[in-house]
Length: 114
Image 1 (cartoon, helix red, strand yellow):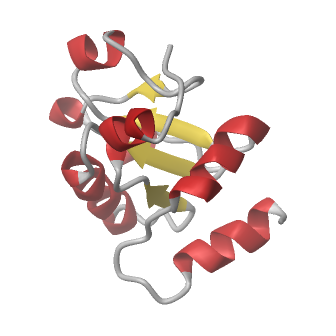
Image 2 (cartoon, rainbow, N blue to C red):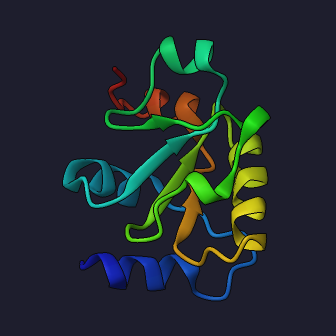
């Protein structure tokens, strides 16, 4: 599935765009998405999805996200990434989704962290 087809499927009519686990695995494997971890730096340092960049919600600025690459937001359990998603959408971003299972769900399903 192409990135544009995946984004189209993810954004299809939902008020809160979320990416499912299998699609998250593909996104991590391909590296074609920018993954923004909105947990605080000490949480991020304790283990994060490979390739994720830290954008703590406490100082989150959607303008710091790339506009040229689709973005996945992740936190520990989905609450903070959902708030960051709302901020990004309000700022005019239409290429952003969140992984509602969070890092906890990612690890529970066998996802590796670095």
